[in-house]
Image (cartoon, rainbow over all chains, first blue to last red):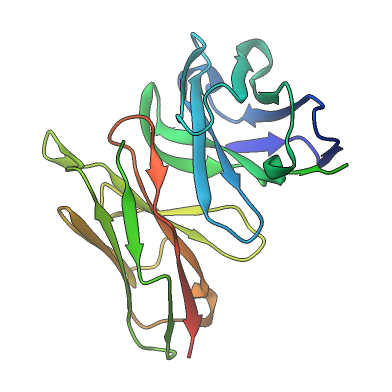
Length: 121
Length: 111
């Protein structure tokens, strides 16, 4: 089965750093774009950015550019979402999702269950 | 950047009746005769689930009461014969070019 397994819930203080992960299995991880989506409490979906694991090419939403970093280690089929300095407003659920065609950026057909991030002093 | 505006924000429909959600794009999503728009369903406490791609192609296993239509700038998701399990928030998303974006979501409830 194709699946994306995300790391567990995190609690941090403002200003702290954090790196959450998304591990793919059941498919050729390197060849499919992986995206990250934020969902603030009780709110809609925000597209954050995306990475092509085969060569590390990334694209960020302007709303998140400079505040997050997306990376991948294709040797362990894992993508990462990272913050150098968290804010309370980063409190949200973060989903990773896969593009549904190899090498192309299309709809997201497989989603992780989400990682809850709480930032509070 | 492409902006998708969904309407209504919420709607309540009787069981067995029809619900229609609209997604309006501020730019064309048409390229090489394909419409780069998808629809997702998100039930409470779950991740989004892809229902429709290319504006009207139903994913495998999605009931045929879900229908996508439109060619831009307006796109529609119609749920015919509404069932209890269709209670959810529905989102459109374009994948024309980065940054990809979602509509604001439409909450569908039972009247």
